Amino acid sequence: MSDVRVNTPARARARVIDRSVERPRSVDAPGRPEEEFVPRERHEGINRALNVVLALIGLVLTLPILVLVSLLIKATSRGPILYTQTRVGLDRRWRRTLALRDSRQEDLGGQVFTIYKLRTMRVDAEKVSGAVWATENDPRVTTLGRYLRKYRIDEVPQLWNILRGDMNIVGPRPERPSIVARLRQDIPEYRYRHRVKPGLTGLAQINQKYDACLEDVRAKVSWDLRYIQQQSLWLDITVMLKTVPSVLLKFQGW
Image (cartoon, rainbow, N blue to C red; front, side):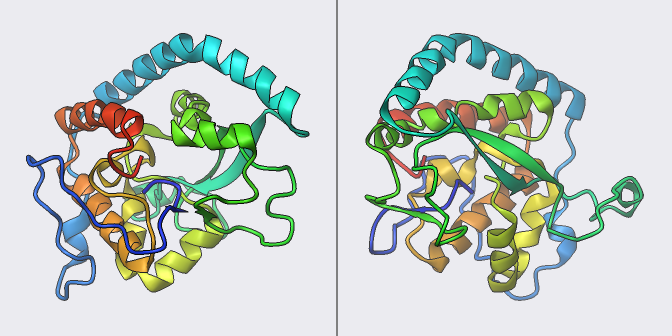
């Protein structure tokens, strides 16, 4: 799930652009056993190598843009160039054989990590409101930040998260611990999406527009669970290729 950004006052409608992937059933469908959401087996070594290579290429190609944007951020607003947040990533506890390796004292839904983005808001954006979802025409966003968000340039530093192993290029979008805690209460099957590493983009981002209500979040979770069931190298490549026009043409929720 992408960073949950409310973009319209009414519910955004899902639109399937990947017809090779069956539309997922509602996550609220009764009688769906937990075993249904076991991630599909794949060669993780090959997957990791692909992510590292593509992330390195991406950083090299975007380096001039990052330098220019960094200078513009410093020149147009007070505060740091990079913005960091704590996000919830892979949950290793769901497999008993892996749980012994995890030393987390509190169950936040997954292993937390620091995500990196180019700053698009004022430095005191959440001083009063705390962790909240961004909205359309959010007054906390700077003028430059609106353009960075429009074309997702602010997300480019997450390639470093991919190199670190916090994320993959494709996977469910990571969220903040406080928001994860709320969504785990509202959507019982939300916790299953943490059984794989979070991603920079995913099935939800190329098949559905921004979230406008909780039902839209449920729909995106359904796409995330479908990805878990069908994950493969070819599916990842397909999602990556479809992400580019989704960003440039603002076709879907990326």
